Image 1 (cartoon, rainbow, N blue to C red):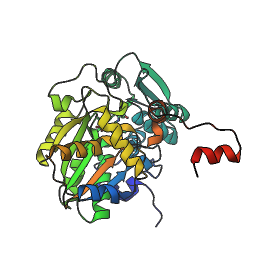
Image 2: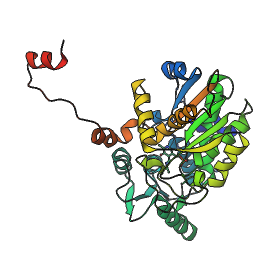
Image 3: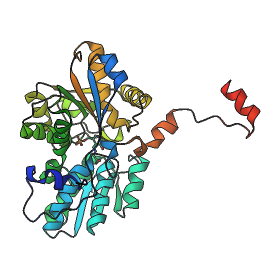
Image 4: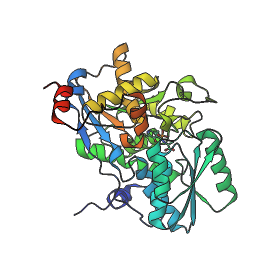
Length: 344
Ligand code: F0G
């Protein structure tokens, strides 16, 4: 049968109310891409769960199909979220699909171009906040407590329900859970969802390596970060809404949450792209964490099955590449010039 989206495929395993009306863009079913060179380097079987191949280019679509489907079923007219960008684009797309009004609050000047453009293209009302993601989240929580507007951040339990499906897919493809799952951690909805998904699916439990950016690492520092800063703007978050659950997932899985520098993130992004998988900076944090741990000798990858979750597509944040790396050479449009520049 042709693929009909996540609620169709896994809805019976998700705790969604009876009023839920399926709104889908055929999200999910993303590939688990084997990475032969990285596997050889670490002596393991390493695969990328490439969530950048979802309809709006990030894993958020898994949670959004569930949250919007529930909101529509209960008669919501308007949805709202705070976002570092990907949630905004995803909420905008699913709201558009359902015919709902979408309002998205983003931190001023800190959202990557591909995400902002997506939110606008799908027709959301985009509002920039003179503050951080955390300030925006506080505002949307307050307004959804006082008005009928529906909240679609991952505080909404249906977001987490939808995002569990990635754990199910990994087990379905591999036949069992991997030994380790490495992923970025921002507001901590996704790590919470993976852990819940693996526990529910009963195909074994991975150890979880959650990775924050060093300038936005409240779960590593043990306290909120007032002014989070990182090139990985998707995870530029100082007060994760599901921080406690993230720490629980790390501890219960016998894993941990660590921090990596922006330089380590960019290096991991480059390495992934050099093997054909271009992801946005935050999405490279999982691999950056694995590399940092291996270099310190605190992570023995040898013989293990490792899944690294890459949460968003590289196209989301093109300026990270165009600003930091030199732009292509310019030559006259003639054969001699081409020959001299390529040195053939
Ligand atoms: N990777 C990407 C590409 C993200 O956009 C996010 C979160 C994360 C990782 C972290 O996931 O928050 O569940 O721990 N982006 C949110 C947003 C905050 O607004 O798009 P998390």
